[in-house]
Picture 1: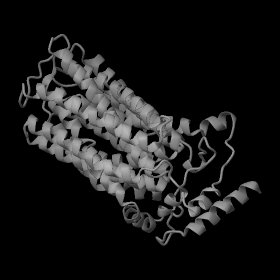
Picture 2: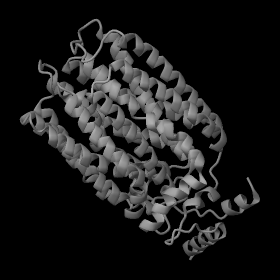
Picture 3: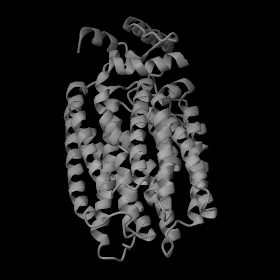
Picture 4: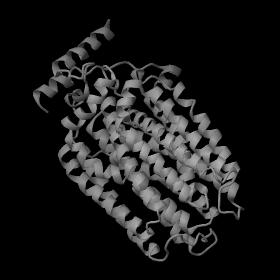
Length: 478
């Protein structure tokens, strides 16, 4: 560490954490759990519906086009969502982000009642895309800003576990209500239950604590934007890329991070299985996602150096990519579009395919966990993290929009599968030099000042940052 870095580090301010019920409420673990509940009631239930294949509909075309709308809108707004989050504040951004999920799932109920309501589903998807971009920018930045550097894997796993409980519970509801169904679509009761739960999720952000009042386990507070004007935050987008260009080596990994869901949900689960089989598969898939994130957190928070953990996580992810896709290839060569949709849970063909689907659940959560962890390894600054998560969701959504559109126009299952495999491997290969060149064993305070911009869009000098730190220390003593 340079002498300048040491001077900056030694003035870091620590605070005494409150005790009793107040301490429990303002504990960052409590807040990340509540953050997970927001994910449970919104994206988690969205995943449960999407994971059924075709949104639970017999004809997946409307669902595929709706997902194109979701991810196209999310890609467009996601690039700026970090700036919006920093300007509005995380609580308000979270609140605005929850509304779209209730509307979107309600549109499928409308489609069940009125088969001609496909346009409403697609329009709801576009609204959800805007809301989702805001929600994920706020959730991602807080999830990575609340923990200390040694806890980031654990906090991501806590969030991912609670969030994926939404997929588990939603899939359990779908399985229970459709277990004896011979129809090819999900029943109205399933959608109504999901609508009620997503409506509850709208309330949770309003009762969460102000991030400025959260004290980490080491006594430090999270760094928040100094002056969140629109001009300053929009300039910050360029500043992040200019001062930390290594982030762009993660962009292929970000792009691939939702690409694989289309083949897994629509072209494997939706194409091969009955509604009962799809519902059970979805339940097992989201359960495995919970354990995948927990398993990856043990690697990422182990006692080895941060660089060693980063390379170890990368290696595990590359191995899982090849194991799952080599296995899946031997199934994919056996069927073509639209698929038989006749494999039930009592069929002998079911066993091997469901275990593969479980492994895909592990791979999905491990990919997302290490993507977030790598962003957290670059910065502890909530403002910078919001912008990076915005880049992540924008590129992720752009990829998802593209592949859902390819599915909607009936590109062959094999071509989508091969594109999935190629993009995952390419994403990991591009990330490797970034890990080597950018991931350090500790994030220094001087790195965080790069996005501490004033209301005029100028970066504060490091000496000014030191003075601010000292002034806050003196004020807390007084």
